[in-house]
Length: 209
Image (cartoon, rainbow, N blue to C red; front, top):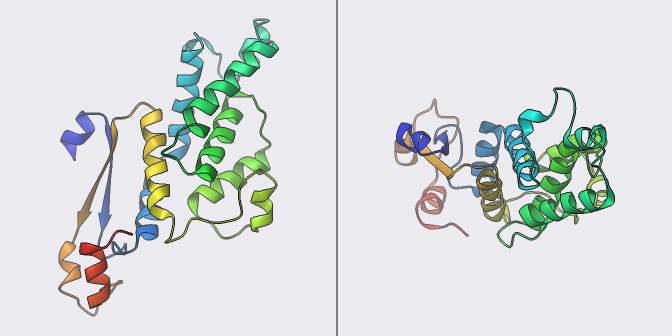
């Protein structure tokens, strides 16, 4: 893992006794909860500002990119269109990303940039969708343009691929995942939180669909 971090990879270590590694949605949730998604999105926003010829170091604390441009008299319709273009290029037009995932990230990064604006309630809502939370109704997400649906066992693999694309867009080389306590798949005790049946064991080793 140290070597991976030295090569600019984000690293995550899962515990087979605490995370069902036969279930891809459980793997996704464990990885998502271990990384700093807000940091990734902020780095994505910084890369967009850089693509537009600006340094994030030049933006005063407490001021987003759009506010900074406005203070310099540079927030014109063409600049706003370029921001939207950059967001689309980074997320919406990426064929390796799930449509809902890409839209969530585009809206969140746009909120960080200050264009398009994003209300705090909607920011929290989008983050809850990415985390797989079931606290909100699907109709709440639909209002933001997302298709009805949540992250589940049927799409979790594609969602993990989408998350890796965000990691790469943020400037990292990729994601490296390690798994501890693999013996839990073959040796179980009464103290184990997760018990791997024969079917679960086979799913962990052989099946990834």
